[in-house]
Image (cartoon, rainbow, N blue to C red):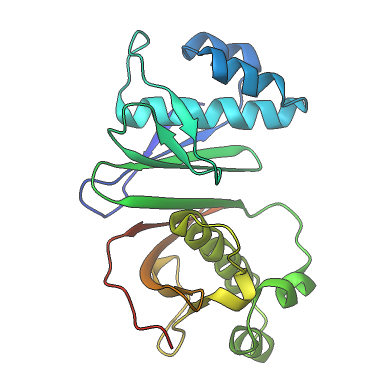
Length: 225
């Protein structure tokens, strides 16, 4: 399946998707791998996980239009946050089911998550990541799309915040007072660790058999309360 360019609706923010139908060799021939990348790939033993890792890197190459001979490496910080060796763009990866995706911006920190909607989910796990208000709204009108959107949006905020020790249930919340679930929209979220508090707009899109959520870190800090 060819690369799919996704309209992020945010100026200067690039998003791409790949529906993985190819084998591992296809991606290896398309990517120029560096020693540390080969080393990391060797530590991934499950065939599906290897395809996810490789395809997400090819998506990044496509959205940034990186040529085969360009010496730009995808690295990881001590917290696991990905970055490019030349620091030209802030980046984030995601994969779920048969899809991989990536996001990049030269100006803002970014976060992205993708959820394959055909994968079976146990909605009882809501108690592990939803706060009491989110649970009460869900239980008043149980909706799978609401469940999966909140999970995905929290994954995205966790990635863009980029610090260890953040609890999905305790530290990440949303303003749901005027929120209406739709196929595309914006969900307002907050990460509040007690020491630091930041607000975000999380963009989401239900497209066929996947959900994509993404955000940038450019909104004003909120008061810690």
